[in-house]
Image (cartoon, rainbow, N blue to C red; front, side, top):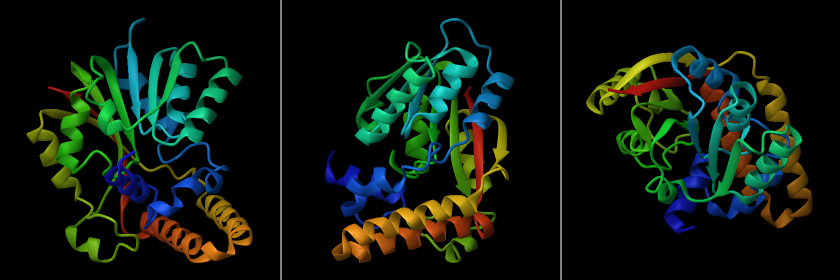
Length: 259
């Protein structure tokens, strides 16, 4: 992993430094779904895609494979998942065996920026809550649509602000959020048709999630007191992002189709 990729990965995980990356699997051990809602994504696929026996999906920055495994379980379709964090991929592979979908799921450790150049002809690509690891929003859209068929689908889990001035109020500010209108303009410019959007689910227990983060960060501080500043900084950024979701930004899942 090169240094630029490490920085983008750290930022996507709301870390201000790459020094935290080795501790991320420990901190996030209580989380199965990392960002995207598997149920929402499967709902959009079932509603809008004409699936066949040969349909296949690409899940970039797949985390622990929650979305991929949901697709395999509920839709009986093949999925390739890619993530940079080895422990996440190990957990994903273990879960496929537990749920007996290992024949449908393939998970690999890799840099999605490199992997994306060698993959194509998928029915849909999924890119969930991974910030700007593929570049700017427009670069991300261009890269994603190269991996799918001519009339294939791009499914993105993102967030936007209702107006650009709200970026001045965002607590965790590692990049400027676009407005919904700016995203729609980018879709049109890149020949992607917005089929449906789902705003973030109210079913997530954010208070429980925050407590997991607090508990694991405190455990690491007990074990590595010399790194207290590192873990405290990460916890602050994570809690700030929860506040942003509550007050300033709108989480959304889009399903787009290549025109």
